[in-house]
Amino acid sequence: MALIAYSGFDYDAPTSAQWTGNFGLIGRATNPVRTGSHSLDVGVSPLGKTFSAVATIIAGAAYYASATGVTIMRLIDGSSAQISLTIEADRSLGVRRGDTTGPLIAQSSPCKFPPSVWNYVEMKATIHDSTGSVEVRLNGAAVISATGLDTQSTGNAQTTEVRFWQAYVDDLYVVDTTGSAPYNTFLGDVRVRTLYPDGAGSSTQWTPLSSTNVSNIDETGTADDDTTYNSSSTPAQKDLFTFGNLPDVSGTVLAVQARWKARKDDGGTREARSVIKSAATTDNGPTEALGLTYVSYLGDVLTADPATSAAWAIAAVNAIEAGYELIT
Image 1 (cartoon, one colour):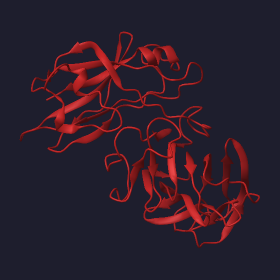
Image 2 (image 1 turned 30 degrees about the vertical axis):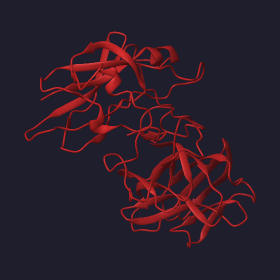
Image 3 (image 1 turned 120 degrees about the horizontal axis):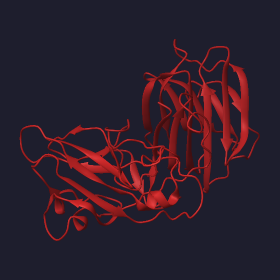
């Protein structure tokens, strides 16, 4: 698995296609925002990410929280809490076995978590009933590092879901310990950037509802669904678009992923997929069977530039084309 998920929540609200939660109680916010246009408000209901069972998981996110006595991250086995990362009454960060009322098994020094500002929190935890361990980093610095713990509340030394909770959340990631560096440990204080289409790419084959293909899909923040769209009933037709540049001129690009939203408008089978083109090399995302309602889909997580098989350069990201292709 390695890099399991990341999001900045700038484009459309989370859905069950990628996340778990009561989505009627999870909303996006335009204030406060750390990067981009939106953060996620998970003040009353958690956002979860499920994965195959692992003993060790690493997750990070930016949190804007004012309350104490709350859980900001929780590791789950099935439907039961293994451990909870909390903001304690003295504004220390605490790790409790089970839920927020469980025993405190590790704790930072007091006053570590400043209220009502953005703080980047990462936790690496191993679930075990005697040799469990937890490391928590706040804004890049280790504030909890404990081993030989009982971090297991269920009958299984594993976690299958991480939940983010009781704060505004932005710039989130989840990784496990498989795969190669740097995707098997702390990623650090990351930023998730969202780029939007700004021009026609090398293929424009779908039929626009009106005007140009790019003008029908260039919404920022939230898709307008049937108000503007492009359509096709011809397999292998493809639309590709250019995008605005990253706001960063230096730094490391950890991954690139295409996000697209689509539906079919009649019975029968319709399948489509995302496409990312770097230089002359194309990566095709997973084929998705479309339903009658709009769903946001995610393409492959590309941790390397498909044109070079090396880490992404900022200039290469700025030059990509991306879009979608009808399969059936």
